[in-house]
Image (cartoon, helix red, strand yellow):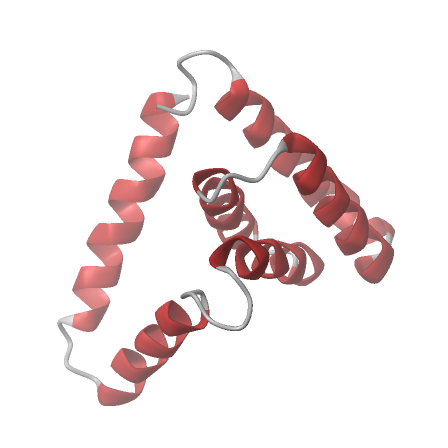
Length: 118
């Protein structure tokens, strides 16, 4: 799992840098807006990451789901908190969310395996 997480993070960072080096102002502004949305504010980052996770599940974006599961764990979310967020996403998105729910829980299981998320 460590290798898969490292590859995910490495690819994401590499490609984000590659995209941003284009100098396109609209893309740069969107990336900045996205980063700022998850910073401390009236809601803590943990809550915002859970919200991002729910939205990503409803929109069925596996890369986004993985990113937010990782960020949720980094922000200290418990399994129970994540399961409640998964439930909200399932209720909002319907049964089409189930395949993404399976992959999210598989990632969570791997991350919670000793040595899996390091």
